Image 1 (cartoon, rainbow, N blue to C red):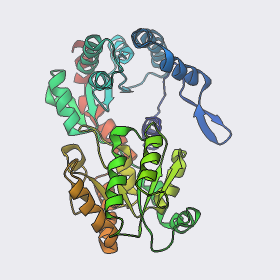
Image 2: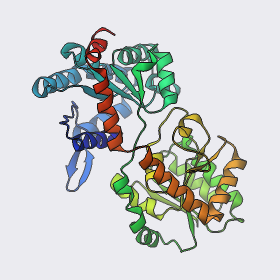
Image 3: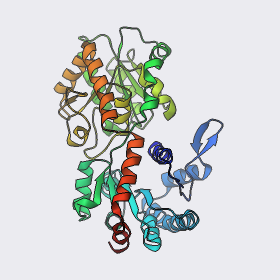
Image 4: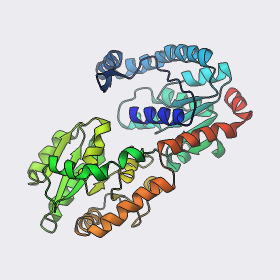
Length: 387
């Protein structure tokens, strides 16, 4: 989340716009050359972890009061042309400020949070959160959905006119990701990979539903046919202990590297060591940030053949796709990607070209955001005030 917020701000500034970040509890601070969570943010995370669900939902609602005050102060000081907000559940401060100051609200939405948190068992008052979500969506001048699949879902759930929803996918920083080419020799040497090793990688905060177990199981079953295959997993997460146990049980200890948590600005060093990247499973409406980074780094992608990912990927052109949860197709894709270096090179080059050609970059997204605001014209304020 923080990567996206920071990247959008920097991209808007790069276009010559003034940007003021408003947060009652700043998320990060500098500790030397490293960004770390602020003390207040660490306290909030601890409270969130141990507070009973219903009570925490109440605290989240109360947070709107301070959020609105902070936003109002910033608006009075900076006189912005629009508010750009990343939607958070039960958050209505942006709508309040938009209505009071008659400033259009552009609302970025990454997921239907009320339903998502209900499905995860993390929400007690689903009806209230759903109503607040609909209120926020309905009162935004434009809703910026990260996929068309999500945009259609939001249009139906909040009864929005289709023209009020704009699709703005996630993005990548191609300049940073191009470093993988020169970093590759040192990165592979640091991880002790031999020239003939074919490294299959994945990056993320790993949860059970990411399906990394599918990757481990598939590689175990085809290992005899592709002895050069190696696996590199970069990131932490609650699924890691089970994945380590599974790797040991499958006899993959000697070919799987668990790199652990890596600062985002150093992920590129690990991407440089990879020959191909795998997304074993993806949420049906999501726009995985890592997908754009994989493609910007010129890495061939293996991913499920599902609508939200096919908004970006073209099977056999810049990716190899398999039917979701189809072990046989996943194994076939893995066999091809390991055995065919020319295929890896072609898919990787096409993936990088897709990012550049379609401007799936943070600067491209900043241009889309500004263009969305400019198309509002005078009606944008009225829509926000009277929706």
